[in-house]
Length: 637
Image 1 (tube, rainbow, N blue to C red):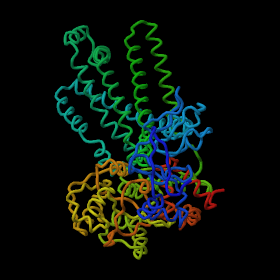
Image 2: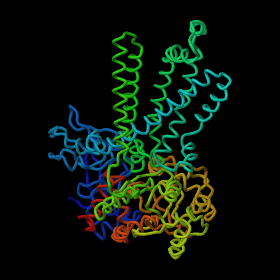
Image 3: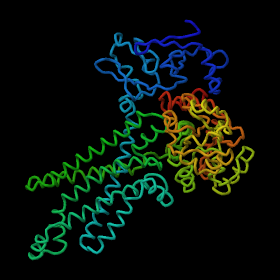
Image 4: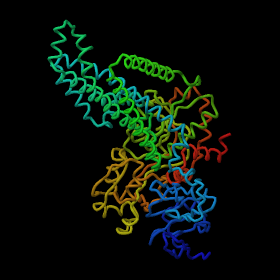
């Protein structure tokens, strides 16, 4: 093979990439962390493939892409024509590595030689972005499905009882109708995120807050349809019932409710569908359900997981609506046999619900449980899994892991104070500014004061400092950097008025966030965009933003066509990662100290960036990545 160029045939066209070493050197200069993975001349084992003019991808001997730019991936799907391309591919390369005929060649999108395809389906079975994602992880999705049902059905049951009662009351006492409906309508207009934020100080994070919020939103259709159904009954029918001597309760139970039932059932069906769909947002506050899969998929750049979670919610809503439609049809049957069958089915359904309720309330383990929370960040998912694995291996404790709590420190710290969580990974700079509310720039010289303040103010302490420093940085799109000759943060000042700045929500509210950054460097951006942490790189690559905040251990950084700028005034503080634990928990379980000692200083910046890359770009599961790292360190038996 000529070391100066490599040719690959793609879509019938041959492209030639010249000066291979020059391109590799350029990539390594812009991504210094890669020098630790491929020191010296070992970098030249990378094979470059030209996808389109000026767009390149590097592979390490058929493994996953090390650097990629400007192309859309295909994905694995087996049909009558063999291996085909879909839009769901995450570019992990598993199809190519598992192909027995090697008919799938590394490229972007993957190059297929269909005449040699065995139609064995191994590419599809091993594809984390394919339909096999659900069948390959039945425990994960099955557990989330049951949690979603539990949260949704509890809220639905409460809304039916409370909303139905309120609807009956205002239909009997019409003067209450207008103010009651006004209050319910007002509550319905509050955005769901705001509702959760309002409730957290009172009910904390987790399922209870999710059920309360869902119940509030479910009240409107229930109250309104109950009131409307009863109010629109023909007055002549009611007068006839009263004339025959029926009491007020008899009129309500025997006349009004049966005649209003079609309208009430219509409200129930609408409310149930809406509640099941809305329950997905419960994961934002650390509750369970299928929203966990959606939110985790967004955070870890796993579009397939997001899609599966969304489809399961839609399927669940349709199935429950079909069941309610069946119940509604049965209720319209008036024969004696039909009524007897309905009673039997009703009693059976009630018995099943009671059994499920009893089972859900039974303790699943006699062991003490440690409650661990993590923020919605890939590396926190990995760290959470490490803690789970080690604690359950080295102690007699069980672990309840709540991954990806929305709002991060803002919601986890209050839950720690109330005792809902026992441990969570945190960053020193974040703790100094967001928890202790200090305005100065944090440095590790202040760690002693940080530790003391946590002990005195919160009865908590820092333990198990991992060793990596996940501080902030700024990147710009490569074309922007070249257009304005940007190399440092100070260079941005002259061009900022032409650029769009993007960051996660809490960055704009931090003491060391957007305002402080702009004041220090004299930046005035054209506009700003608030983004979920899992969507930043997608927005940058699509050109929706020009400049964005990154974490220095981001896994997607090496795979993004962006230039990291130099913090020439050393604005950003240190953000060493460690664990915050409640003193009460450590005193009750001193064996935990040995677990944290094992992890102290074990993870470098490059280790964390590599693990993030494996999850976000190669499509691996955080638990698998965590387990592999612990085995490399000889920490797992």
